[in-house]
Amino acid sequence: MDWIWKSVILILAGMVLLRISGRKSISQLTVATTVIMISIGTTIVQPIANHNLWKAIGSASVFIVALLIIEWLQLKFDFFERLLNGRAITAIENGQVHQKNLRKTRMTVDMLEIRLRQIGVSNISDVKTATIEPNGQIGYELMRHAKPLTIGELERSSD
Image (cartoon, rainbow, N blue to C red; front, side, top):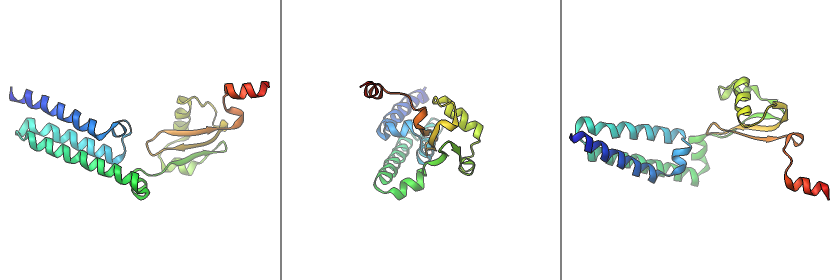
């Protein structure tokens, strides 16, 4: 029955440590965040088998401190952000797909079209620019003729 209490303590400690790591770390897993989160998961499971509860919590705390330091370095120094996260890669420019850049991201045109349709873009030629962001999301700007009309634009045109 000892393992039940250890499990409860580890779950609570894991939740507290992940809360300390911040919302960004949980919602946008970067390479560093992913490695640290996997390490925490592996570390937290160990005490149930070998009775090193406080050592596991201490190790998980070290991982979280390392994550906070890495994120601070990324905020302070652009070099670290570029090194650890990379930069956005242009996938479409003026309605034309950049095949070479797509290959860098190991994405096909079909995969790009699927992702664009998921965000409401049905035609590549309507896209002024599209980038594949370091977190895997697609950022885009539509051509002027394809942009939705806003209420402000409608009111200005009726004056």
